[in-house]
Amino acid sequence: MERKIKAIEKYGQLYVERFLKQQIDNKEKIYSDWYEALKFLFTKVFARGRKDELSERFMNATIKTLNEYKLNKNYDQKLLDNLLKSNGVNNGKDRKMVLEVIDLIFNSLNSYQNNIVKYTVDEIKKNKIVNVFNTLNNIYCIGDKLASFYLRDIIIIYQLENYLNPKYFKYCQPIDTWVKQVALKVGIIKSENDDVETIKNSIIGSCLNAKASPLLFNAGAWLVGANSFNLLIENL
Image 1: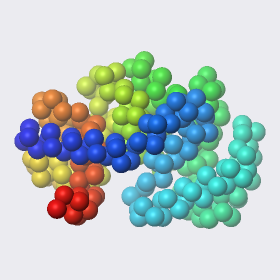
Image 2 (image 1 turned 180 degrees about the vertical axis):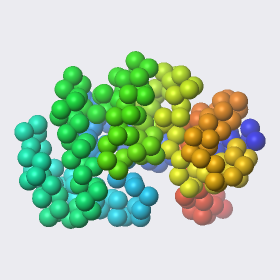
Image 3 (image 1 turned 45 degrees about the vertical axis):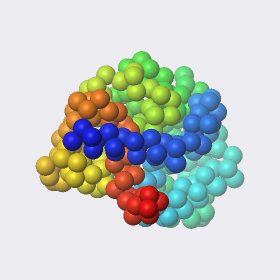
Image 4 (image 1 turned 30 degrees about the vertical axis):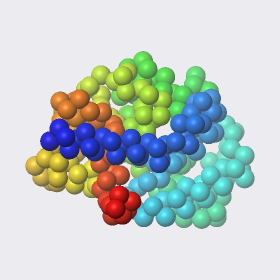
């Protein structure tokens, strides 16, 4: 099993190269600019278990609306909701999520310059990742998987894994069908029907025993599961 875990971890490194390079190159700007940080968060929390094209369309329509509206702390929530809807964000769940995120950054993150990424990074460095997870998990339609997805990629981008106590790895382990299937094939779990907490703990324990990064394994498991055909063709 250790050999297989290490192999999936390498695919996690490929995930970083393919999906996080731009964010890594711009990480200082994201950390210092609240609006760039907000847009970064949206690249994660719109991925709500539907077609990627649909999630991307709603995200792009949201960012287009915020650009046109020139979002600031004096925003009108009702007007913004109507603008989002007229610009194509016709899913009420997405609009409610967007408005709750904006409310968070302007009303709860003043000491972090209204920057969700600065808040996240600084709290993790203070060993308070639980606070960030709970904050995001309580926002409408974000929940465990998307909060963990965002936290996993933030930790990778800002190289924060060494700040984590092993018991906190569960807060950056997004579990979807691809991760479950890979964990099952590798032998980390016995059944896809295991609950999320069990799957997270099994992945974390197995990775730590194999001296592999639970975060990179998670990212690699998603990449392998969701893109196995393309990866096969690339390696022919």
